[in-house]
Image (cartoon, rainbow, N blue to C red; front, side, top):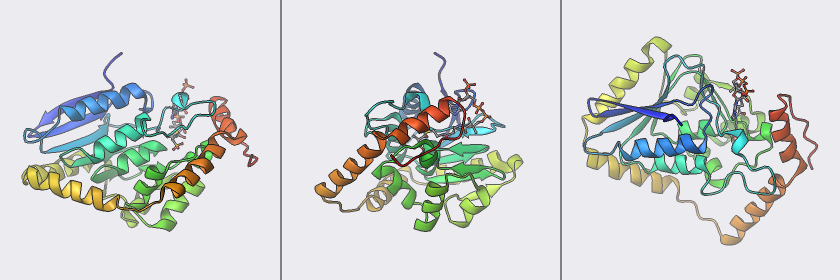
Length: 259
Ligand code: YXS
């Protein structure tokens, strides 16, 4: 199987390109290749990482590979799920990771992009959080990751409507750092990466970890966690969950009946 994440190193910046045509679905093999590429992109040799799709991509990533979602009675987003592994791997990577985005971003790929440390997008880019369209009970660390980067009402609009949100609104809510014309995307990202690469990698590593632990500092009792997990189980055990997956396979809009 061809490698689904390729790496090019330029001036101590590692450029990682997602390469799983036609829509960069986040399959387990792709996440494995992403992890390997990140393992090879460590300081002090590498001072910054850029995560991108192929130049001119219409779809940055269609999110979790729907065909890999469990069909019967299993949590689709467990701790060891490929998407969860990828998000944590980016969050704990010892150098800053910049997401350079063109095209459309869907589902769990939105969280993957937003788990990066900076986000630079091309005009025309959109982000769509789709669990409600697929019947998937998103998980606690995933919804927390969204809350960490923007305001509650905006998170709820994205999650409850599951509609593509334009780059301009993502920037207005502070979710992305830069919105630039597509022709300037790579140069803008390269300039940001160069600025980062000229800084102290030791300081970057400790400040990134400080920000991660502070942002994740949310007390929750074991009983509360168990209650939420029980509520999530009712969703992934539901007929609606089956309907969401069936509708995707049949390329039609789902009809959710709330059971
Ligand atoms: O029919 P073929 O075999 O040609 O395959 C089609 C699609 O089925 C396939 N494909 C995917 N396969 C696995 N996982 C996916 N997420 C996925 N998305 C698409 O790719 C082939 C080309 O798709 P097609 O014909 O629709 O291309 P298009 O250019 O017209 O449209 C591209 C998209 C991305 C707009 C469209 O494919 C789409 O809306 N895909 C679903 C996006 C989405 O809902 N992703 C969320 C996945 S679930 C997830 O990330 C989390 C678990 S959650 O749901 O909780 O957020």
